[in-house]
Amino acid sequence: MDLGLKNKVVVVTGSAGLKGSIGDTIVQALADEGAIPVIVCRNDRGYGYESALQERGIDSIFVKTDLSDPVQIESAAKTIGDKYGQIDALINNVGVNDGAGLDASIDDFMYSLKLNLVSFFAMTKYCLPYIKKAKGNILNIGSKVALTGQGNTSGYAAAKGGVLGLTREWAVDLIKEGIRSNAIIIAESWTPSYDSWIKTLENGEEKLKSIIKKIPLGNRMTTPQEIADLCLFTISEKSSHTTGQFITVDGGYVHLDRALLTE
Image 1 (tube, rainbow, N blue to C red):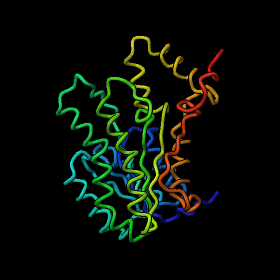
Image 2: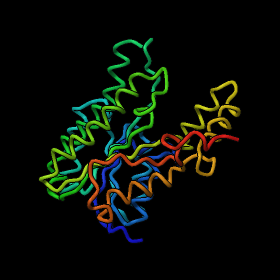
Image 3: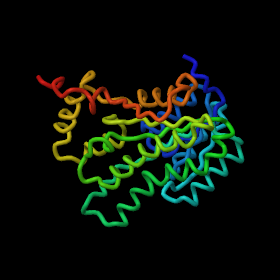
């Protein structure tokens, strides 16, 4: 299906993660659709991703940015706006489940909010003039932790709850501009960081099997490609009358009847 994303400028935050991460997969999917992905992240591997995209003939750039710093975010938005003149879609993807629980310091809790929530507000605020020019849209990447809790991650849970609140608030704020705002909610997805986390556990393989057994559809994790595909559809004109929505891609992990899990 042609999603009509050719030459659309799509900004993706937190997108210079390891190969196979959700951000990287979104960027590659955008490039395959002929869009122009803009990588905004603090990791220097973004320079290599930029070069690889440019070698494919894509006018993509990497804007190195510490997304916990609103000053750097404002500068990044200006750099993007000066180059392209407009932004067709903003995908607020950055997120780190940092384990800032009730035993964490207030500073650690506040840092978690800065990275996982304030960055969404700041990026949207400073990109908004260019989004308005394109009559583009906003897509926030959320987490099931906002709906279910997880334990020992108060900062991330609070931030992701706030992301869902902002998603609907912006849908209301911007509806007269014709600008859509939606969120994708992710549960269990096999990424390099998930793999690293499992390897830190003493009983990692048993824990992984236990999680997979609880995913009703196919007893498997959601792939980053499935998440990227849904992101692209949601920002495209194929989803032109969808706004203020929380779209869950999780194989039924969060919402379906637990009776499905009976062996």
